[in-house]
Image 1 (cartoon, rainbow, N blue to C red):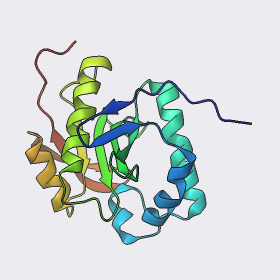
Image 2 (image 1 turned 180 degrees about the vertical axis):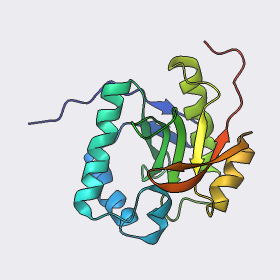
Image 3 (image 1 turned 90 degrees about the vertical axis):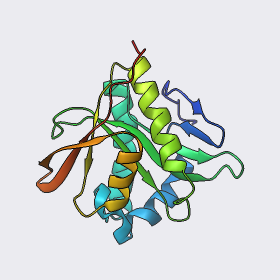
Image 4 (image 1 turned 180 degrees about the horizontal axis):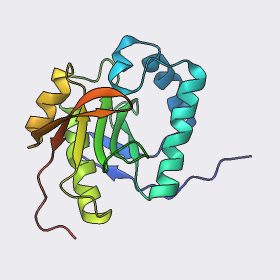
Length: 175
């Protein structure tokens, strides 16, 4: 039996497609979550933990009407990460999050995906001037937040771990 996709909008940029999670993404997601690189986004996790993460992403869209898009590189069709909005019981407010798999960093993909996701969330999902939770040691995400125009707002905690809260600018001309 073929799975019925949720109505997750597909967004395209010059180099990327932001789309809903697909079962084919599970293997590269599992490989990522088995590494220490995943420490800033709830990892490391085993295969079952990765499965639960994927299922939660799909459920997030269903329950909240927004969520994380999986990022696909247009030329290769490869799944390279995720970006979008997260809001779960432990969150103070909706968060713009992003993660790239190894090999996709340093090409501007995270900026392109996060900018696209943030603009869509502001225009269509009533999520404007959102935050990003960033681990204090995650200097790469802090640099990206600054490049996106976000400013450090305060120190905080998320899921019992220290974090920094970065505030994104309100996008003008959005509904």
